[in-house]
Image (spheres, rainbow, N blue to C red):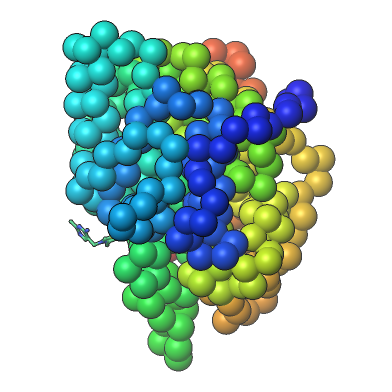
Length: 314
Ligand SMILES: Cc1ncc(C[n+]2csc(CCOP(=O)(O)OP(=O)(O)O)c2C)c(N)n1
């Protein structure tokens, strides 16, 4: 992917109330850099509502709608209809929600928006748990991760289930465009946003967004932890446009997942066999993604599986 110079304008203002090292803050910052000021963002209950609106200030340089956690998708369908009725066809209508508000509580709303072919962009920032309310597990929490509701002890090994395959669910709706993005790779992120901005119809991003207090690592290491998510193959970067899948960061040799896992306290309990099991799953999934890319180039698109554990884990 060609190198981009990031636009200098900031639509996420400094002095906001995110934790130090918050990757969700970077994700919206980069999204808005790519979209610019003709944008309205709908944000449900999640960390980002708290970041954006410490009363009586706002951290956003664009208009924002604060919506209930289950209704991001419905809210952007409504905003699009209103904008079109007012003749504001150049307005970017955007939903930004956490993994809990997207993959669990707001899944019906996202599905409805995709099925209605709403002309809007939806970004799920995936910090892999309900962070705003104290690190409870979500469907997007990975296999074996510690959270406050998936404890580690003699009889429990963190989350027992695999990570929910949100890209697979979204791709089953055949959106105009869907991509994975990572704030640790801003050029790749911005190139995808700029491409999505100029398309018409439902568009979706899954952004991996490390969270220092929830993942239990030092806040200075966010960019490195995020980079390792992609460099180990755990969170591959790709895009799907009109059914064509394209990997946008390709590695001849992936780094061992151990390098990613051992940086985070939430995986600190893992044994060698557990790390090996995750590694073999990640390797298989990377190969599956390469196959999906080949078959989609031949016109036989298959949504890639993105779970991290055998489906018969329980
Ligand atoms: C219907 C409903 N259930 C629960 C809540 C409480 N709640 C507010 S924010 C939040 C966490 C949201 O998690 P996620 O969407 O992953 O975003 P994050 O907090 O990680 O930014 C929850 C459970 C709510 N506001 N509404």
